[in-house]
Length: 129
Image (cartoon, rainbow, N blue to C red):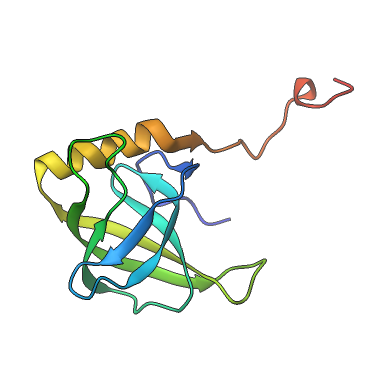
């Protein structure tokens, strides 16, 4: 087993939030996993790896006085979804974001991120336990 390279906690994302290309306004995908240093999204098409992209998230009005946050991110990996081969999972690392927008991003992490389940279950995790 390969050791986990990430140092930041990741959480499943429980809220539908779109990520758009800042320059074209086209949908890139929806966030499904988040950390304070990046996110994983589902995309309808593969995205180029190790490519910086100017992106935005446009549905932050419920948690902020802003309607959009802007940032620069890099796609670090892109794989077909193991359950749905028509979807691609893409991991992004945040590269540059204003402090005000980063505050909103961290608020998203805290409000809509759900702690990932442990791979190890205790007996008390089962109905009969």
